Amino acid sequence: MLRRLGVLDWIRVGLLVLGLVFVATGLLPLPVARESMGEIGPLLVFLVGIIVLAELTKEAQVFDVIAARMAVLGRGNYVALFLLCTAFASFITIFLNLDTTAVLLTPVMLALAPKARIAALPLAMTTIWFANTASLLLPVSNLTNLLAMEAIDLSPLEFAARMWAPQVVAIMVTMAFLWAFFWRRGERREARYTPPLLEPIADRVLFGAASVACLLFIGALLAGVEVWTAATVAALIVVVAFAVRDRGRLTWRLVPWQLLIFVTGLFLVVPTLSRYGLADLMGWLLGVERDPYRTAAVGAGLSNLLNNLPAFKAVEEVIPADDRGQLLALLVGANVGPVITPWASLATLLWFESCRRHDVKVPMRRFLLTGAGLAVVGLAATTWALVTFG
Image 1 (cartoon, one colour):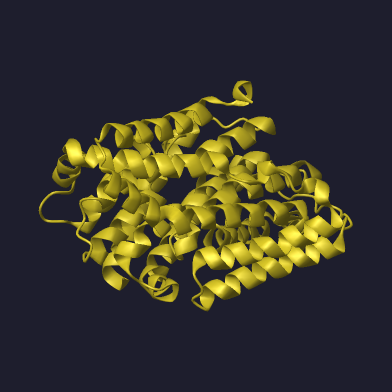
Image 2: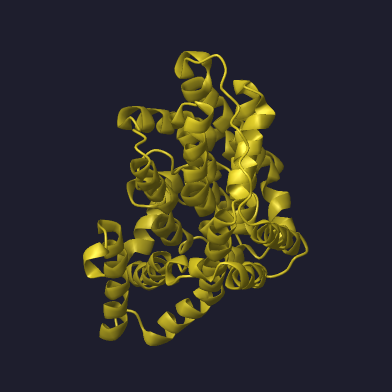
């Protein structure tokens, strides 16, 4: 098992071990550590539930069927396909989390590419950019949103009421960049694509159970049910269906242990570092005026330098709990901004691995430059929408 661990896995394990060392040596007092662990308990339950739900939904062919029918509905027209892909990736990100889009939807879209004779790179870039920029609307859309919910103290619908305008702007800017740099005729070369043949659903019972579970999860969120409860119930529905119809698919690999240890370690290491100088540095970066544009820029900059989860947690530590506006601005930076470097978000790291497995070459220079443009323009426009309408 140890031989199968990759570099990222060792980094996650190392972060957890470092956090435990901080607790054992007293650098992080035990009561503070307990409080931090109590804070992320429901969050960890949600992560397990949503990843299991998404993985089994993919195994039930729900994503494959939607992607194939989407390509058929486009009837060979690239503009129609572009709009459908935008809507699909945005919907999955908003309601089923950005990791679902980056990790599970990416292989589906890349598998669709050869069937419809579509260039793979535009489809791949659509999934990863919308995995980040479409993750503002609901608490479940991004882990950073969930981390901020206790401090922000808003219900999911109240949160959406504050973030709908920034989300719309972020999606519109992303669409403009995708079309200009990846989807327009001069970039993709082909005038039309070939609609794929529809393949039969292997197991309609599993397909139906997974579809119902996803719809129930979305409905529960809109009804104000706790996210960890909604995710757990929805996941259990699909697990029971697979236990009856295809038990072999239920393995321990469904449990996202890498993400669980990363988040746990993060909630031990960052509070420790904040006690010994990190908080002062973050306060200096934000400045005394607490400008939302500067806050968003700091969140985006640190996300691309480190990773958006530790960046968000480090900056959030120094923002007053009653300053919702600045916390929301930080979310804009930590969600929309991490589109430049390959390590800016966990979703991007996993997306690169998926592209590698499917032999899709991502030109690094093009990825960095277009991502930088999207980050600058998207950050400014989305923050403006937050300040103006939020």
